[in-house]
Length: 212
Image (cartoon, rainbow, N blue to C red):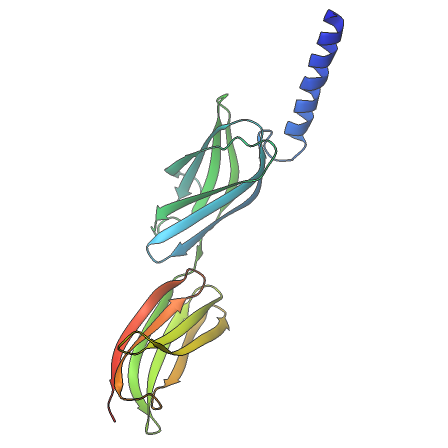
């Protein structure tokens, strides 16, 4: 009986070791995704693991030079050995940080850097002016983006009804000008709102009035 128990224990141990080392990378955690996106005043860090054999604590760290690292936040591991786990952390934007990384300190005291990456800047700058172009009244939108993305333009009347909608096509990083003809609008007070589609966040607003 003792021999049978010993064999079963050995096979169980061997099987666990094979799973822990079969995923590549860390023997405790297999990372499948890690990134940072900067929007205005915040940087959103997200990462995912395919499995986690040993529980522990994730450290979110940032660096100015890729050598010296500062802990910006901590999250407990979900410890899921048989399913994907997703994590998110929001950091205050600091342009001095050029790199982020995810580090795991497991319950056995092992320290492992799982991923290191550069944050992508998705901030949008929008300037809105009223101008007459070829005797037609227009709103001139000047905007700049650092990453490919879409902007949504809406106009609301004084009682909050949406009277105009336009999605500006996805553009690559750069500066752009969009002319919006407002001469066809009826006499009323209006509010133009420019929204960043990716974050569903208003990035610029302008109130204007039409008199006829």
